[in-house]
Length: 344
Image 1 (cartoon, helix red, strand yellow):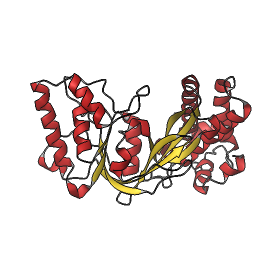
Image 2 (spheres, rainbow, N blue to C red):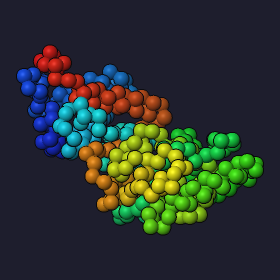
Image 3 (cartoon, one colour):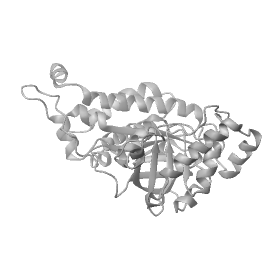
Image 4 (spheres, rainbow, N blue to C red):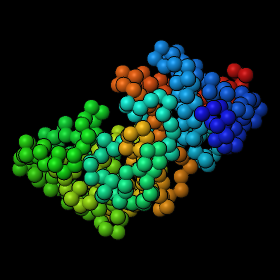
């Protein structure tokens, strides 16, 4: 991928945002991506020149800059450059075992197959995508939760349906059944689980066609088992950043709690329809989520930066370096015009 290929992807709105300034103050003129490529290179080269060759480093510079450009919203609320940067979302993922040259940028939010139960694709009506391609896109209901779906006793705190970085691939219902046999919850936990299930059951009413529950925090293994039995895919421990990116795509805020007044479940907070497809990148099964037809209009954008890492040690270098470069690129747009004028 050359500079021209990246340049052709830059919409005029980006160049307009970078070249416009407040009345009476002059902004640093920016008519190409070369300055932003130089900024990315200035961050990445000192950190990675000893672990990457020149070609790998240049490819990483290109994809990091591409991720920043494609994450900028198409229609900012007031056109301010700082608001452009604040609305940008670029999540970084490491594809362990993949080559650095396979690093790429995908629109939307990406979940790795190892973070989901083995039954996920079947329950979502998807087939595994071909290498380098994607499967047929389906639109399903998604429930976004910022609260925990675990019990207070938290006996299963280490339980993970494939969600941890060092965890083995998920085995769905068999896995949680084994964990449940080892640690049977007590009466107090049984009552708490029953309450959680009752609240979830009210939220998963048929008309919403919920097929994916995306939770920022942990989901109790017994609840994972129950959701799978209902034909719903549980996705836990997304973290605040990825849930925020999903919320931007969905055009709705996540639910902060399962309990509340009667009207709490009547509004569409936490509910949205999203487009899903599966794809394979260098042997990694990925689930890609994008805005669905029912999502509210939003001026924000989210992209996923996929970094090929031959080893865990290389991932420990690449991810923080890429995040530092993205932070610097966003920071250049958050500076006010006075600071930029003074630097001109």
